[in-house]
Length: 80
Image (cartoon, rainbow, N blue to C red; front, side, top):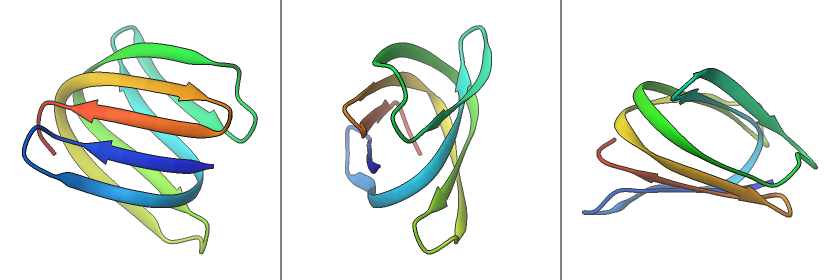
């Protein structure tokens, strides 16, 4: 899957991943390869990603929106 995490000031992450865990408005959730299309709001919390090379990264966000469709994920975060 391809992921982009974007804030108003910069692009924080761009690359291939195998998993993303997000702080959704109604609880945390994960997106894996071939996930059904989804749009969701995000609360303040941590985003966890596992990159294609199995490196694990964390990003703190103050809220935002995520869209996943056709194995492409875009996170628009208020800050990260």
